[in-house]
Image 1 (cartoon, rainbow, N blue to C red):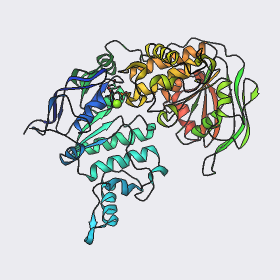
Image 2 (cartoon, rainbow, N blue to C red; image 1 turned 180 degrees about the horizontal axis):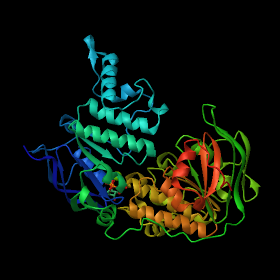
Image 3 (tube, rainbow, N blue to C red; image 1 turned 30 degrees about the vertical axis):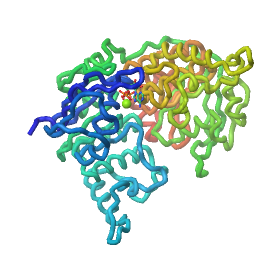
Length: 511
Ligand SMILES: Nc1ncnc2c1ncn2[C@@H]1O[C@H](COP(=O)(O)OP(=O)(O)OP(=O)(O)O)[C@@H](O)[C@H]1O
Ligand SMILES: [Mg+2]
């Protein structure tokens, strides 16, 4: 028997205009947690899709538990005991948890009748064993993202997977959920499972992984023992230069109030009051962060500012003008930019090319009319090429590349590029660096600080306290839909913010 659960040797895979994997090697030992690290677009998801049988490699070999094998489709991967928790979940939204888990492997009673009772029992057993608490009868669209991920994990365990691939599982989780997932990964290893973990968080790699393989621009760079390297070493291996984790933020006087929320109340689609009597100002040349545990009204507040959800009471002003009841387009035209949390739902149109996505908010304006009074596609195309260059967006076919074929991190860069290029007065930003590699995070944070330097008012929601502490001038802590405190960044510690998020008050220092 081989020491390796998985051996992928000399794997090459090309897509139009890109070599996604260029003679890549990956050797994963039995019962280890093996991290796969690389920049956005380095080829990690592609390599895993090949292992899972979703793509076939142009060349190279794969051995599972020492036996060379061709994995032609995901059914073969499943039979081999390989399971995958995808970067973008693949659950049926209006099915229950149990229905999703058994989909394709439904147990039947005599006469071929679906036996959901037995299935439900087995699901409950597995979820107890691994501490994966989730209600088997809930409908997927009604549970949180963290719970949906548990369903994906249960699905692989239900199929008896002994090799489980996690493609950026923590990008969508809150810090608490991340800790829980790390425990689950350790437990899976203890139970004898082999795990591949893709993550951009070097801290998580140090935390749980045994070894780490690094890819850069489709090429294999090396495999290291995690205990023998620092986070800085990993970052350098991955981007090929040293990375600055702390960014310089020049001192700056804030200007006039540009975005003002006054006694705002917002209800969610089920009529629950999610934002309660919230007042907050954001000034020109200032970054105000909203710190809070997910689900405390952040999403609803941002949607109310953008116009996606009505404000039930209270007012919102942009540059002194009330925008509370304006249409979304009117708000955009008055200078409101938005980097949404859910980049697939609100940020991009997958089938559209990069240049079409870049022009989504201003295609109808004069700048994109040519002399025949038709849409000026040539200008859209050349403008997008400039953004691709500036933001280092890795796309095989340049501005013509469909957004859906970009790697996750590069999709995010397209949205950030579009919103910043529109020079908004107010930039509302949710989770701007989610799913980005360390080099890209450094770049996007620099750009946000540059925008502040140009006098934009920036409202930032992030679940990552270090991002809030790094970028913001003032920090508003939100709990149960209300702001519990607003502090200047240098007057408060990460720990104090954490405590206020959990509901306890910090005395004084309220500005
Ligand atoms: N189906 C596809 N069609 C065309 N190009 C693709 C497709 N899938 C991936 N690519 C390209 O292959 C390259 C590698 O992409 P991949 O998704 O494997 O990167 P990644 O390392 O997972 O990045 P990220 O960290 O951003 O998720 C990228 O340039 C991407 O645009
Ligand atoms: Mg990926």
